[in-house]
Image (cartoon, rainbow, N blue to C red; front, side, top):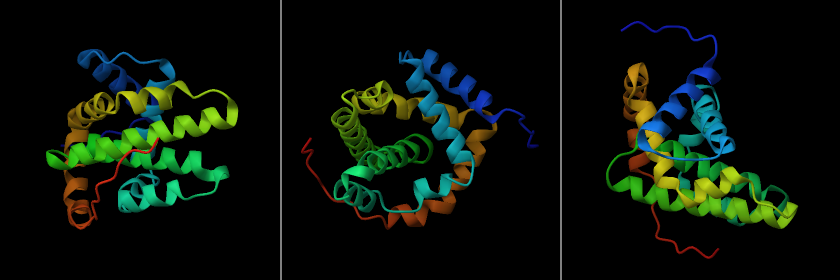
Length: 174
């Protein structure tokens, strides 16, 4: 298989996300579709490694204990990492864990935004409320065309790190 250059990565992922959302009948605001698109662009670039390198439970612990000024961003990072892992890399039993942590993090980020600005961003609310649906959208995008091969290669590379990732049960307190 040959790798073909893409002049507009954001446009490519936008088309893939919208198509997967239509096929899966996942209705969402444009802001949420763009958020998911931006996550895919980040995964394709150098920021992608940050989404899979650290244990998710540690990221969540740091986010929950961070100062108010950075808590929103930290919780978004946890949600993004969980969404990328559950949609792009994970299957089976691990998916439920990532979905629980991701939904919790996005709901927490939405609450932080509402507390700070008086209004929660639509994307964070939708991602928190319907996290599994968006993970499925990312799964479909990952399986389409060459992305499936790339995703499988990344899964092999990070399998050992994920297997060693500590998993703790937690209860939502938000």
